[in-house]
Image (cartoon, rainbow, N blue to C red; front, side):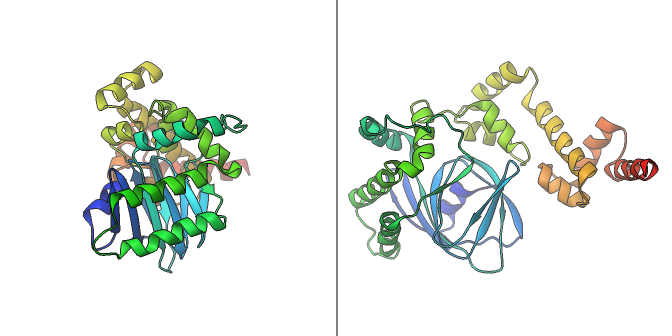
Length: 294
């Protein structure tokens, strides 16, 4: 599965990058070819849409990204839906320890945060006022500057950007999320699993998203669910696939994709093991039962 954070660093012909001490600023036209793709990111990031449009789908919710829209994207997995027009974007990835230092500096100004305990979606819109627009516009010339800008300039640009995000009362939900998670660098494991089980992630990728070592992830998972991660994931994916078979007319291939299975044959095998019927026969049986009732 594509890790966006890794992909932007290894394809310099697609992604224009400027970096400084862990900060990564990226500017590119999205290379996605398929109409919908599984994407995950091991690092959170901010984004700003310059041209075109995209739709993020995650945990049953959708977020439409149009030109001039800015958002914060948490670590995790999502479906990315493309359209025919080119999608041009700026993204800013950041080290969590660096952002935490900035949070500590402004904390006295952010204590009256009424939204601090509200949950944060995987993709959360940021108010794009004139100040934020100017922040993004000021970055564009640096992507073509030779030699690259000094690291001190990039750090100042990020600090200006993040302060304008976090000190805006309309973005209090994002500030509350950082106040809760950054000091510990951990997202609740149950939240990570419930949001991402429909994606074909490895256990190592789940551990990375949840900010845990693989050993720590496995240990905490068993303490929480009293079952191994592999068995839990199969059960959850099968439940999701069965729901789609029961309630939609999606093809088997579409259901395989949207449930996070490796391929059709793997899905058919584990589905039959669980329900004693192949997915196609199960769907036929459900259809017959519906006809009899009517």
